[in-house]
Length: 146
Image (tube, rainbow, N blue to C red; front, side, top):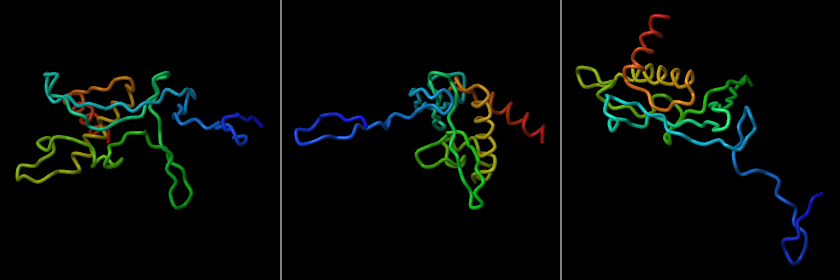
C-alpha cells in the first residue's frame, strides 16, 4: 500500500483516482467540452451555439456515452449535450428555422436538421462551426438516401 504522511495523527491512503476525465480512445486526460456552432449567414457574428461536445484534444475523437436499456443491451451515443438534456429536440436552433407558415414549431424538422448537423460533426470531429447551407445539403442527402 502506498501511504502519504499528510496528517500529524496518522496515515492517509493516497487518492489514486483521477478527477480529470480521460479519453476513451487514447486514455489521455485531455477531454474538454467544446461548443458546436451553427452559422446562419456569411457574417461571423451570426453564429450560435447549438450544443456542446466532449472531445479529446490529443487524438481529436468525440467521446461517447454508454446507455443500457431494460433488457441489458448496451448502446453507444456520442457525447453531444446541452444543459437542458441530450435529446435533439432540446438543442438550440432559431425558431424561424423550423417554424411553419401558421406559426407552429415543426419539431420533426428540427430533429432531422440537428441530426444532419451531428452527422457532419461526427464526420469532421475537429471542426466546430458549420453553416446552415452545409447542414441543409447534408439533410437533403440523408432524405434522398432513405
